[in-house]
Amino acid sequence: MRITGRGRALAALLTLIAVSGCRVETVDAHGTRTPVRATPGSTGTSDDAKPGAGGAVPGSASRGPGPTASRTPPPKVLWSRGDRGRDVREVQARLRQLAWLFEGPTGTYDSATVTAVWGFQGKRGLARTGALDAVTWQRLLSMTHEPARWELYAFGGQPAAPPDPRCLTGRVLCVSKTSRTLRWMVDGRTVSVMDVRFGSQYTPTREGVFSVDFKSRYHVSTIYHTSMPYAMFFSGGQAVHYSADFAARGYAGASHGCVNVRDEGKIAALFAQVRTGDKVVVYW
Image (cartoon, rainbow, N blue to C red; front, side, top):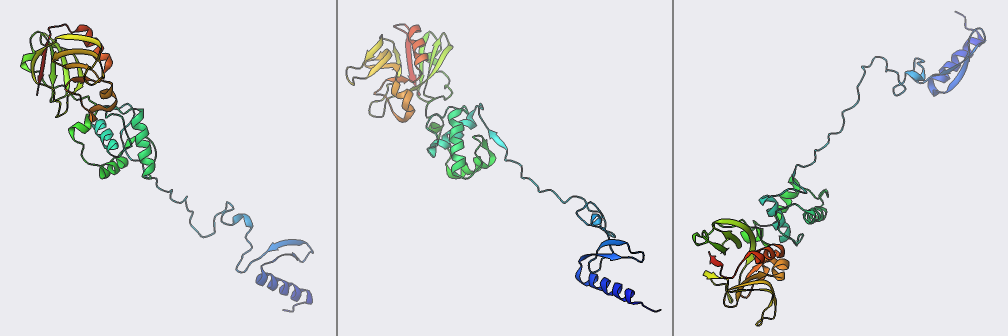
């Protein structure tokens, strides 16, 4: 076959296109100009058929979307605002060991507990939620010791001990040193229960059976010059009375032998009901 000069020029131009991959125009035998983009190994497929432009790659299988990244579920929440019980009291006692909580323990997951847990979580690099989740609980366990009984009830709230048999008849202030509680009982029925504390080892509260000698609503100690509101004297200078110090410090302090009550509302109601001559029983 004879190749004309024009044919040789066209062949050279196609060779240049194959090597350089440039976009050029070719002229067919009728003089029509056609834009062509050729790349090494290309068959002249249009851009729309390229991967990423919506077309499938010839000879390749269609691929679905890649796997999504797995998400770690948040740790299980064990206790949160509003929960109550002995377990919550332990959480609070452990937070108190680390000085994150100063109130309580109360046994109620209140706003002070939420704030303490939130601060503890932030300090340890945990997610700050204020709720006690499994991860936060394990970290708290690792940093504290098992709370002793009085740590759990540093501000009272302990269940009252069974009444002494001497409390089951008549009108009685039934005071248990074991549970640190006072039951106001009438004919064997418990009318009210309140937290109490006692004297120190140097000024102990006497045990036994007594009676209320006299009452003094606004009493002030003549020995210690301290206020003794709602005082009900039963053994010399020892009395059942309200203590603002007990309300503020809990069992961190002690009386000079009296039976201190920390709830002013409860002792005010008790003071109104107790009569001179009513029995007082202090026992272990």
